Image (tube, rainbow, N blue to C red; front, side):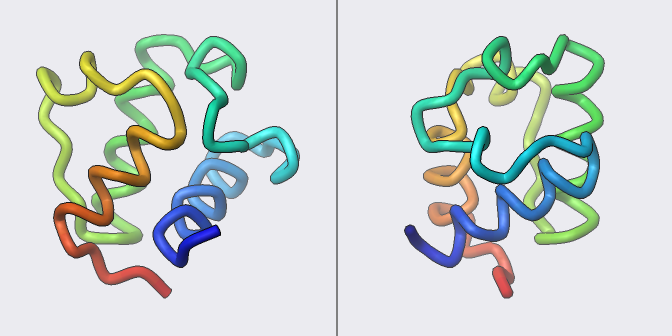
Length: 80
């Protein structure tokens, strides 16, 4: 996996207390049990941790962890 994916997983696990093994690239928000409010919380957590700003419109277009990772990579976030 990429550093961006690892960073996204870290944010999801830290914010929602999920098992890291469940946060696979093909996992959807539904698979992870994240409703629309949780998705907004995720966007806020990604902004705080990685500096990635995700608009509401963009968020509604994201379907999987892979989609989030691709956006993080595209934005050149400061992944650790």
